Image 1 (tube, rainbow, N blue to C red):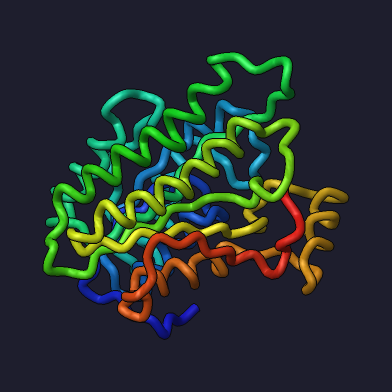
Image 2 (cartoon, helix red, strand yellow):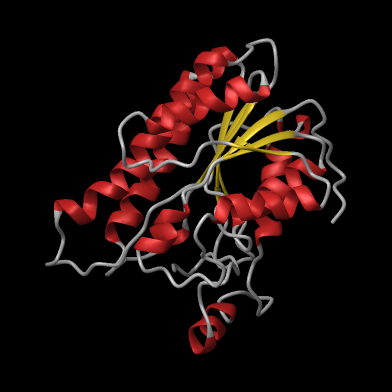
Amino acid sequence: MSNSIRLDGKKILITGVSRPMGIGATLAKRFAEAGATVAVHGFSGYDMTVGINHLTSMPNGTDKVIKQLNHLGLNITAITSSNFTKVGTAERVVEEATEKLGGLDGLILNHCYGTDVEIGQWTTEYIDPHLFVNIRASMMMVQSFAAQVDTTKDNAITMFSSGQYKGVQSQQMAYAVTKDAVVCLCRQSADLLKHKNIRVNCIDPGPNDTGYLFGEEYETVAKMFPSGKWGTPDDAADLALFLHSSYAKWITGQLISSNGGSETHCW
């Protein structure tokens, strides 16, 4: 896919890159195609341990994504895989990317943690990983990114929220709560970091066809959209590219829904 938006000279770190069909892999591909220098971080151990039935979950998934993109002639830099539930790992990812790319002016927080548990079965072991990965890691990465930026440049952070806020989540409460907190982090950070010339925005990508639903459930979600079909990772990437370009220089502190008109539904 060709890009009309160019990001030549941009240095971008993208997290949550572990599955070839995922949003993270598509972001890495599209940003590199647009001329950005891209570093990616992923932790495929998450896909292997939490029981998510993603079609392309695999051991060492980030390495395999990078090899696929390199085979296309795209220069993607790997950041050491690490688990964001561990203290200090998030900051080290930013530090490693800064060192390998010679600085950063873009950060895309696409990583997440989510598991299904009904109320009545909540435990600290269930709740804490959501807080550590979705919130603590994101906060620490925002802080580390802001500490190294060149304030004379146009810098941008893009976070990813979710549509769970549109309805009660009987099985994904911790995920929904932390994804709502991501929106708060976006809006607060946008104000706190404006003096450093950092724009901060958040994308709600809606349901994306990344290989995690099949059969009847897949068709049910498709019917939520006026078009009758799922969104794709490329749809999310289109918006992220815009937000990191000069076209979005007047946009900050916003939650932007790119969900094909499925406004009345949660998932």
